[in-house]
Length: 415
Image (cartoon, rainbow, N blue to C red):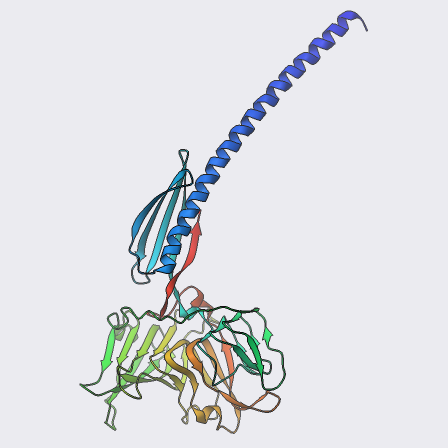
């Protein structure tokens, strides 16, 4: 190769390396610039996220804090977080948290609402009268604020939690936890009663110093038939049938100082409440026959039929000719504030045969009553076998006016 060729070769490689070097230098500068921008954007995001945590923590500690805008200097940047109520009926709130760092802003939007007891398949302050036992099937989340004592091999399809430990009573067995089990979980049953009476569409009450009993029989044509009996009287008033949306346009029926006797087919969305108001033997709800939805949400997912039952004291399946010796259907979310939920003794322990209590919904109470008699092997032999299916609609919604907890939960998060 001649000298001239070598010269061209050297010059060519020099030009190549000069261009490549310039490109490498530009890439290095761009990488540094991108890294700087990413750091600033990420820092603004983390500052916004910190604003969410700061406000949500305040709301969880005190659910009554008013709507307001918070501003903080934080980690070299600023936080502006606005908490506003977007639905007064459901107490739903929105939080917009904006983090700003080095001239760049990032916003996080979340919505929150009070957690509702309807989300529980089963919730008990204590389980003393009846232990989950062989043949019992529990659906949805299950919680007891004490020790979870079982008898034999009950089945828990949802996650089971307890404040105390898991204990086996009676015959040996192995409870089945299809959704897992966790101990050491304390969930106080705090009942927020704010506005329950004042928001009721229909209020039944007796005359001064007297309690009242109310029959509420639901009809498949979206009507309800009601009748009343004043304490001390042996007769019921003439029954009145009216559209459910007429008597309770917002779905809330309230009995003050009385008992409710109910059955039928619910075509609509309603919650019935029975309070004692200091009267002995009142504040209870008695199911006198099957109580079900016109459209079963298990087979018709679009069903809008929904029932909540709230009793200051107890919820009972009444022993009568319609329930004795038969399966019993209950489709509702049930809440017994101070008492228990379950069948009368004649249905639970005095029947000669075994039948099913078919529940679609939830049970929230201090205690649950015995539903059947068991042999020495832990198998039910007579009474009502517990057959429970959780209404999964209650994970996102609840019957009107159903009790909220005193704490909020996040239901959506957008970044």
